[in-house]
Length: 156
Image (cartoon, rainbow, N blue to C red; front, side, top):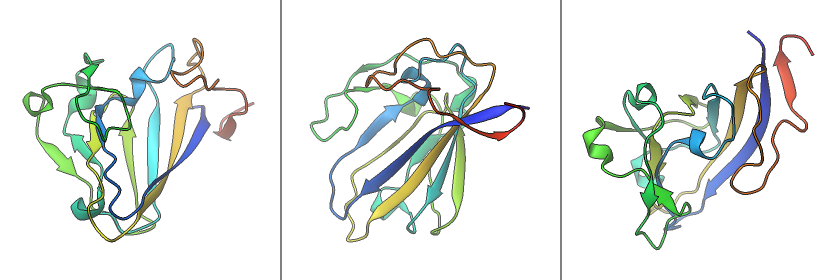
């Protein structure tokens, strides 16, 4: 299979940072012709529930695109969220040691609470997509993807 790394994003929640990432699917932010993207999240620090480990809804990648609503949280990084996630399946919070990684689909419902610990939680998200996916326009924040992609495998 041929794929490109089209994005790298550093996530860092400093100690006692109350910022939440509401329940969401990455695919809703990415203007791709089809949902076939993966995120590889590499932990720079040990991650657990106390320092805002990312939680995933088990099996949610099989549900397709889900509806959103405006979030009521004042500490939310995103302004919209997927409602009633408790009806979708069990939530699983990641626990990783620095250097370990997790992988999730752009359809996986996930989010994180504020970091209430005295430890930083930082990681690098590398995003990959099939080379046959088309970019349909700018992402919600105006960033144009596929401008300078890195081809880790396949042909240019």
